[in-house]
Amino acid sequence: MIDADRLFRTYNAQLVRYLTRRLGDSDLAEEVAQETFVRAMRQDAIANERAWLFAVATNLLRDTARRQERDRRHLTLLAAESRESTEDADEEAELSVERLRQNVAARKALGMLAERDRSALLMKEEGLSYPEIAEALELSPGSIGTTLARARRRLVEAYEEIEGRGERNDAAS
Image (cartoon, rainbow, N blue to C red; front, side):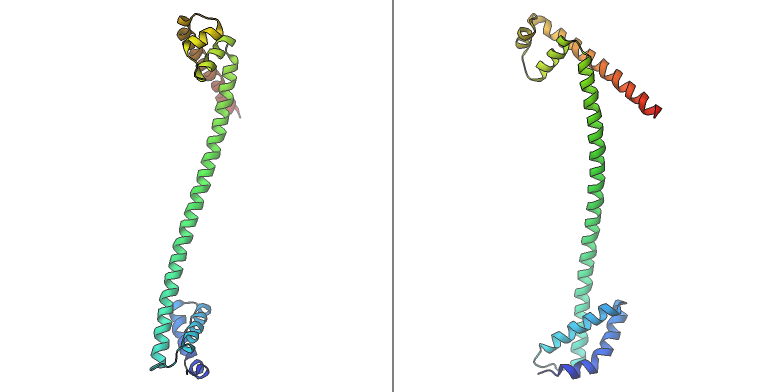
C-alpha cells in the first residue's frame, strides 16, 4: 500500500512547480497535482515514485490540454453559430419587413384596380380556367386573355406608382 501522506509531503512542491511552469496557472497546477496523488493512492505499489508521479502528471496535462482545446474549438463554433444565427435572424427580420412592405403595396395596388380586373386576376391566381373566369364574370371566353393581360399591366403600374411614392417618402425621412 502507498503511503499517500509521505508521497504528498515529499513530492507535492516539486510537482506543483513543474505543473505551474508547464501550465502557467498555479490553481490548475494544484488541481492536476491533486488528481495525480489521487491516482497514486489507487496503486498497490509504485517502483519509482517520482518518475511515476511526473509521468502521470504529464499525461494529465496532455488530457487537460486536449480537453481545453476541444472546449475552445467548441466555444469558437458556438460563437460562430451564434453570430450566424444572429445575422440570419437580422437578415430574416429585414426580409420579413421588406416582404410585409411589398405585400402591403401589392394589396394597395390590387385595390386600385377596377373590380373586374381584380376579380379576373384573383380567380386566375386561384387556378380557375379561362372559361370558368368568363362564366363567373359574364364575359366571353375569348376576352379573358386580353382582360388578364390588361389587369396585369394595370397592377404593375399601380404597384410601381405606390413603390415610387414609398421611395420618395423614404428619401424625405
